Image 1: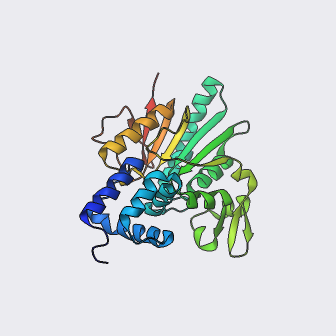
Image 2: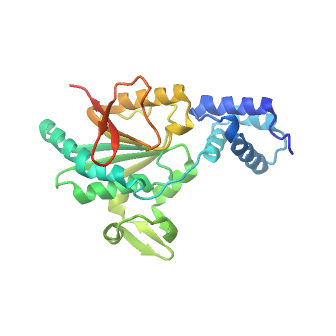
Image 3: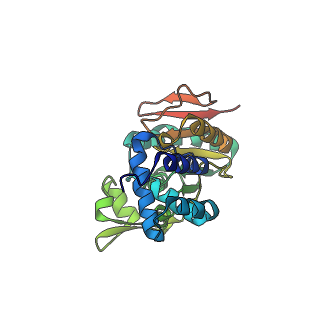
Length: 272
């Protein structure tokens, strides 16, 4: 099956996936796409790529399954600790000043590309721990992977997946089950897990913080800029954007301000 994915088929599926999601497959990661397509054909009991192509262009659920299979769901609790130090020591104090001025005690956060939920649960635990009484936190956690979202909604993580959680948080916000840990319901209630394709408008507005880390690296420049512009539209006049430490908005014509804190570099939307 050396010629399973011909150049023409590669272009066909690469363009389809790009148009549907903004995910860009270059020649260097062609083998990943090939292996995922083989998996889907085995699952559908097909031996013809063009027949599979005909299915996914008319079957939205199968398209979701293909997109799910080509995404990488690498994550962990408190991933990139300097970002959470920045949240605690810079972003939250700034937001509390803004909320005091406006009299609005709701903090709205979007974890975009949340994978299996470790990031939004980390945010929820941190805010539950440090916010003063009287504040409500609404966290939207979205991903293109339905399988990952199901794990996040369940909130159960095996012992191997809880590395990085401070012991005090583990005792306070989890119940130990056989071979794993279950997130407490009061933390789960802070988060709404939802399917979302970053190619589209989320419909979210007036967000105080967006986390979209290690997602933009899968997009080309055009799709990156379009996503960042949609983030801007979704954010409150004074709000904050976290992207991956290997990602940058430099060279991209955006309205975001670069902010270098004592812990990490982030971006800010500031509209008077």
